[in-house]
Image (cartoon, rainbow, N blue to C red; front, side, top):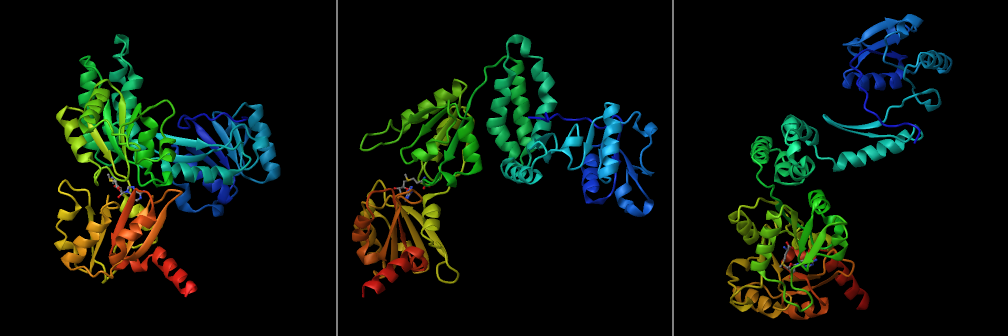
Length: 463
Ligand SMILES: C[S@@+](CC[C@H](N)C(=O)[O-])C[C@H]1O[C@@H](n2cnc3c(N)ncnc32)[C@H](O)[C@@H]1O
């Protein structure tokens, strides 16, 4: 590392900028954005546009020795010979100097910047590759929440009050970690800043009274299996967890993205073994949060679609534990995308019903009457072993036995398989798809899927 990243307050004296052209103008914009007092040396008035000079001390001609006195930095892009001479002058006066694109003549360089107000990320490559720095900046821009700078500002306003509690052994680090990773952070970053500040004030007051800090629970949807289908929010939750209570549906590739030091507890049914049961899960979630831990309850797909997220939410709220929900890509969306299967289709398929075949009364007692209409696509969860009942129920309700169907097994995972055919053959298709989890899709939209078209091509080749 040749250049140490430091944050420079440029508001206390003039920064000399020498030169014109796009590079000098780019530096002018950055310096102005940082609130610098810019003294801009150009060769003539004709070289500059009026709006560029706003708020700038414009000087005609190169800087004299007197101009160097009192300046806080020099930035130049004025041609090789002039730049070299200016750099020598600045160095002789111990003045920080940046010659554009000449790290060898510079004592500081401009990093690529992600600017979110109070939060600024600087990326440097030691002047070797500004293009690489820009690429990295784009990647950071993507993952950095839009309101992160305002969020830092909010925390800054309460920092002193919290610091005053340090003498009592109060951990400000833990406090702010919980604010950032917990519901207050989630509220603020999702745009509900007033509500977030109200919640923060309550927490600051509680801390002042010496009340113990409480953890919180995030119920997180892990998506159907492909770890790249995790949302950024889900990824952040996994990275901030102290403990993760996970269902069996969650793939090992996703669990590999959990923070390394976090405890992972499997609470779902696993390979024929019963899980610990819903009541025990609720009690554990409550106990862990009350012990002050950041708890993630991780579920396949989306927590609010056949995921019992609603029940867990109620139990936690009843126990006074704060809870946030992080949605996930539900199996129907993930599997359909993978199979190239549009779940609706203009004019043809205008309704999507998401149902489960795993009801207390059994699949044979489901009321299928509302799902017989041709314009309805039916996505059936937990229907693999009840495929015969699904077919019988839909056909009895009036659905055409020739309706296209797809069985999408282990969707978005490396061993995924899609099998297509008609409703009359659903049990055989389910058997051909192999092990679950699997989703059944019934409707004309299936004929538009890649999986269907590939099967037709194979039949034609065999004929
Ligand atoms: C208890 S439900 C959970 C649903 C989950 N909350 C969701 O939003 O996808 C389990 C059922 O979801 C469906 N499912 C989940 N993951 C799947 C996958 N990767 N491929 C196909 N179906 C899946 C299957 O029908 C499975 O029996």
